[in-house]
Amino acid sequence: MRRFLPPSLLLVVLAGAIAAPAAIPAIPIPSFPLQKAGPAFIGTVAAAQPVSSFTVPRHPFMAPNGKSNIHDDAYMTDSYTWAGPVGNKIGVNSTWLGLEECASITFDTQDRIVALCGTLDGARLRVLDPVTLATLAILPLPPRMVRPGTTPLNDFCSAGYFFLDHKDRGVVSTNLNQVWIVSMKHGLLLPQRIYDLNAHVRSPTAWRPCSPTGAGDCGSSARRPSSARSTR
Image 1 (cartoon, rainbow, N blue to C red):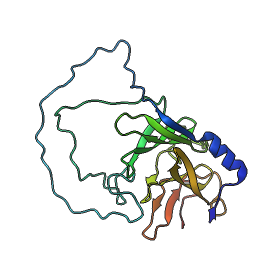
Image 2: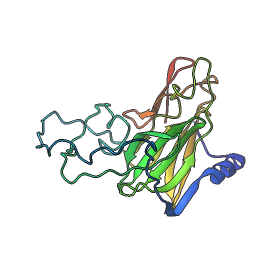
Image 3: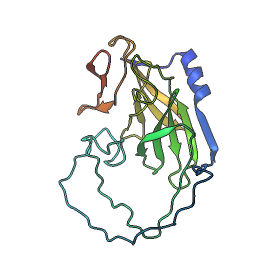
């Protein structure tokens, strides 16, 4: 069932959505004060050794393969069709986001990084500049609900997985038993649509990755109760 934001929740989302017109500069990840600086480079430049494989079909409702989700494509192959670094003129860029871990990395049609970043109190959707790693926009998601037998360090429900669709929209499940379709407009990350699943599942429910089916529906698996759901 599709449901649009009620006024009260819309105000909360608008208050939480952060735009960065001038961008929030990246802060390099700090080193341990007593840590000795290691050599800038170890080894030699490698020669590329490409391998051949079968073509992985692209899902019509997802971003291109390698750019759509943490496991790269709809088949979760964890493989790429482009080369990695070989050690020629390499450099390191980093950004420190405190306790946030941005494990789910995707790339939109402007090559911006769209990431789902989990932390102790929940998750945030971020848009980062691919070169400087400056933050361009942030959308805090509903807060984490610690479930029996879990801790924020081992519970990835609604905080670790999402996918980028064919229209540059983030599709993410939340702790409100909802699936949010998030797009970036005028420098703000905001839910474009919300699919409410509370009529179909019991609470509390730990939603796993939301992935599109062949018909464009969004399928998720729930830890409690154990089930799989699909919403168009």
